[in-house]
Image (cartoon, rainbow, N blue to C red; front, side, top):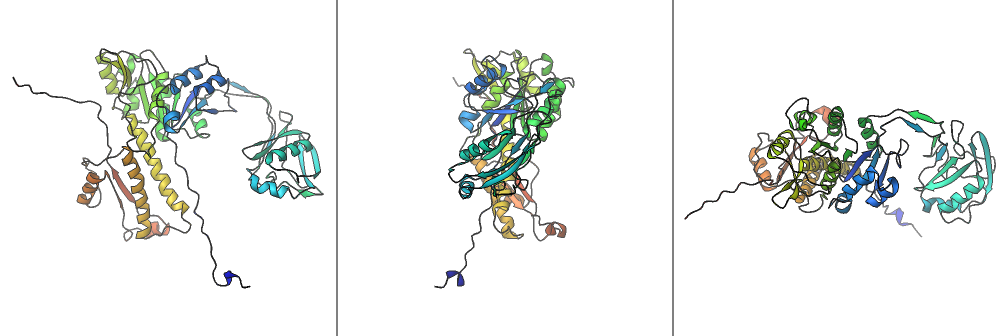
Length: 500
């Protein structure tokens, strides 16, 4: 019987894998507490305060800050699909214990590996641990049903170390520690069926080796070094320190936050922080336009105010409708403080937010200053910037063929910009309105009409006028966009005419 492929052949073009956007509701509290954290364990993730109590002790500073964080309603975990990162800052010299050599295999698919191993009753491999070569042969894998049973078999055949499994990776750890704790990849034995490649443990796989090390001492680090080190491990979008940064550290952290698209939260407590003076780090940060550094004032020096404020801000789910918020007049989980009108005015001028009480009922509410922009503006625009970047990248990355360097191809990129912006319009970040900036592009009437109707406008440059160099480099013409912020009402003046 003739095969259909003599007439018709069908090939399936699979869609490429998409990149995930940043989760704006992953936030970090930095601590020097070594009860759970260290240089070798820079962070832990938490979804409730009880877990922090268990790890650090209920009387610890991390636990106290966590209660303020999770006591905020809503918070990133309860309302924003986020998580609390308790991160480590090495505030003093630290002695690192001697470590063992570790061979970490590549990530395996149990559904693929187990059937392969079930065909082997003469498995073999060589491995050297601490300079002693072990030649393992005659290993029967026929009765296994999962990776856990593979680990059991390997443990029974490897004498110089322990075998474990984590995230579908098989790990061999030497039984000794120090510089003489050494390990090698799996290599083939002279007899039997070599299993090094199947297990992802040989040199040609994605396995990795970390040799043992002696006890060592590492110097203390700056707060700047701490935020950078942890950011390389977990992509947090907001941070604060339990320990009070110095004035110089605050300014340095503000620079880092601006450059890395992260929001930093800090609390200031000196009356001098209310003054317009170059000796005031708050004023310097405001003058430098470091709007990603969010600054609060507390006469009591309550640094937990930053934790609860950060928790209340990082809750927005932008795929919802009218989910965007303002921090003005929100309630936090810390005690509000009483301020004079002079203090309120000065805080507003230098860029400090307050948590104070209103009316005879002493109702606690935040009072925000827009001098260094508003926190919600920075939060919303950082999220939007990332969404635009990721979504346009994914259009290019998941297309099985290509996006053409023609009108149709460029239109796909513009359409993705529009779709992304529409999500943020629905969330309440952008809204139709009158364009009041002198900056515009394209036909002015078309530009204004789109802003007044949609709250945004996008236009791609002409392919016909694109330089030959850009065309040969396969670049899209520049895509320009304008968006109208929806803003928020923080105050009102009311005039009443009375007639007798």
